[in-house]
Image (cartoon, rainbow, N blue to C red; front, side, top):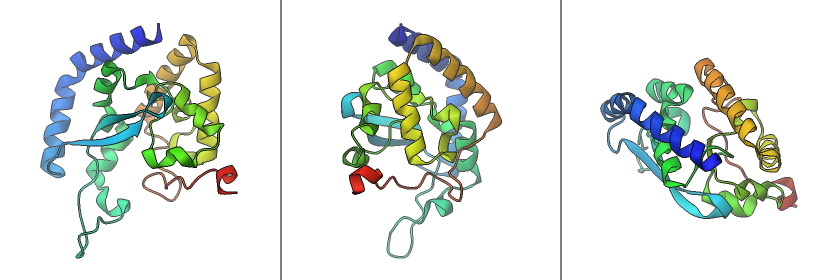
Length: 200
């Protein structure tokens, strides 16, 4: 039922939202340049890598030595708007159709985080990653990494169709409100350096 809901919903949304995605693509090309899509390898089900797609939200601005400038410099007003409205996430509907992701599940993070999880935190990879999830509707990036991972594992242990529908409904309300997009004091979430258990 979960996979059927994913396919039906993602397919319907792609059909209905393709004009919006076209407009966003044109605006990204105009304000941020090429490429329009940001592609990055992320860990999926059981930690297996897949290629995640999003609309770009940051520029490629670099310093005199060719190094990328800090996120707060490269994330301008247009990029902040994309993230606040979650419009940058729309291409991930294609990842859902392909089976790389689900509508609901722990967010896919970076490949280099895999060895940094504690055994309990690593359980977040027992399900497909999602466009939205239990952590996203309970604080999003206003939470600490440990709080987010605990919510992710809670979802893995308690997942159900009813819970997914509840998360989707709460996601709509949060997107319309544009809340908790960034961590306190950061324009993006700071890097996860590892659980206390792993550091010890």
